[in-house]
Image 1 (cartoon, rainbow, N blue to C red):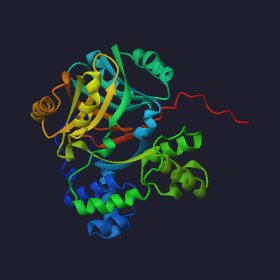
Image 2 (tube, one colour):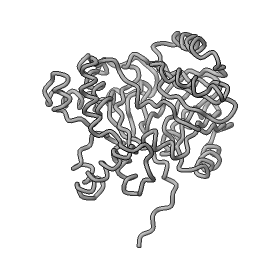
Image 3 (cartoon, helix red, strand yellow):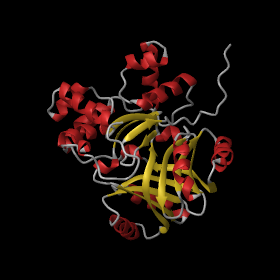
Image 4 (cartoon, rainbow, N blue to C red):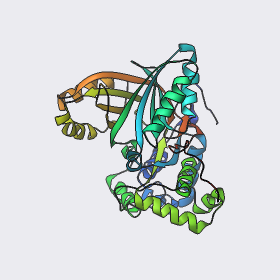
Length: 358
């Protein structure tokens, strides 16, 4: 990928996004598969200009649209956080090996408490056990593995937004997105064809039906029907992502906390309303709440703790970590500046037996 770097460094001038680029990215966060004609009308651009600008920044890897299972679908499976300690010389290789596993949603190298923090999705508890005990623990250089099961996803990164559009523009785009809003709350199990469609959309969440049909070797009618079913059931989540260093919130903070069970719902409601919180889950283990936040600076970490202390005094912060590098986010391996580099679609079903052919 052009201008990519394997380490943390100074961003290339080609990465710079102007106000129009950011507006397009924000528009696609709200309505990821909206037509360029519709996006252009809201932003005061021609469809050709909107498409050309998006194509340029997407090709550079600074912004992209992907698709994954929705938080509702993931809740029906088995989510976990796996913290890995390893020999210093093997840290980078272990992180990359974990990132290239389709069962991982995100992989981060962390300062504080653990070397690598991994968000995992498996189709059930036995599959999670096979991943942790049979795979992660056997990687060369791994010396310690700790696992916490996510008992509930409360806030997900799908809801995080840039601040580049007016309220009126956001409202108009939301009306476009609401046209395909899910009508059921709990997605049912996905069959093999639906899972294949979900994986194909991970590479580019804006792929037209014609391209999807060609990739999957099926008819456009079949793809259109399956895609409508995934959207209607709420099984798929389309996400417009942007390289973190361009968002104005370049620092990722991870926080593990304890709260009395009787107060957890109220505390989590308050935490979920904080605009910099991207991920909030209830977990098993010594701590029962985990959150991930994007912050303006390292100095903002203390401000976050102060705000949590003031608004959620029942919450005891057990540990706070800073992400040194996000190796993988939502199915994409990233470079040192957070630009997309290699797609490894999230596939919790990858260790299921192949369907028999009759």
